[in-house]
Image (cartoon, rainbow, N blue to C red; front, side):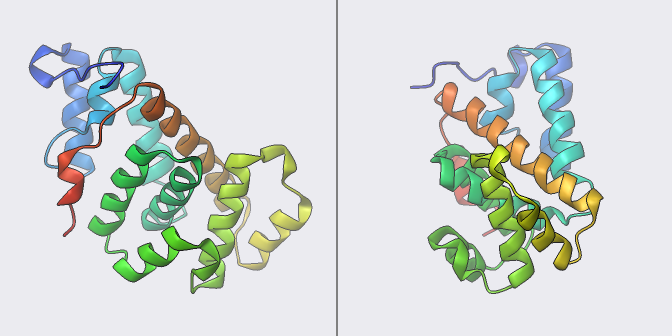
Length: 184
């Protein structure tokens, strides 16, 4: 049972309703997800989260499908079932192959593309132990063609995934039924 109930659109403030609409429309979900409806109790928090989704996850130099894979890897590593399910659904919508998702969920070292593997492993390390990152970690990303803008995006994506995992886990959020059918 969730610790914070969902706030359905008809009961939400006009500010939260606006975010609900923007989120589900821009993210191509059939409805606003539980992640947003849980945060809707605070128009300030739901707006801030939506801005982070839009500016860290959706926009930028790193392709969104790569960021979604980062999100899945970090969520799986941290044991966040809600975010793992949500972002696997997003990967499917974005055309990530089922085989790539299966490989990644099973073992990051099985990711076939070296560049993607380096990015995802860096992101997971960043989410676990950002102070443990070394110049060697950054140099590996540079060898794969990432410049400062892309590296900062990977770091921000790691931080955002941890933020989202904490919200989902701290509220004991239930997975959305729609995640099982999105992108299939």
